[in-house]
Length: 80
Image (cartoon, rainbow, N blue to C red; front, side):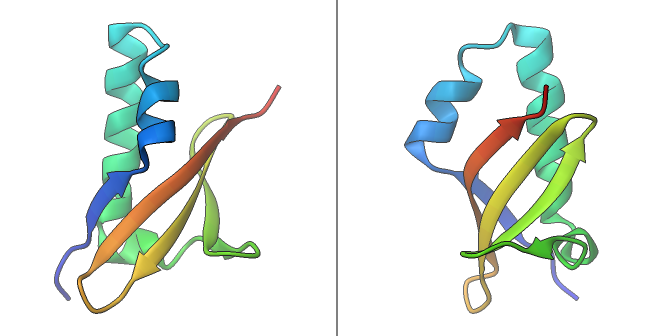
């Protein structure tokens, strides 16, 4: 099965820009793992789209567009 391309909304990109460079790299690597088609399948349905813990304490919410094989991360949430 072909991979899925991952992108974020402008709002998520701005939020991620508030972290330090090292943390940004870790977060982007975690989000890139969503590009693995099998990783997309592990997300739990959550209203609009899917939700999964992409790294300890950080959850991503995304929608998957099947035809273009594109996952759009529309929110990241850090659990306290």
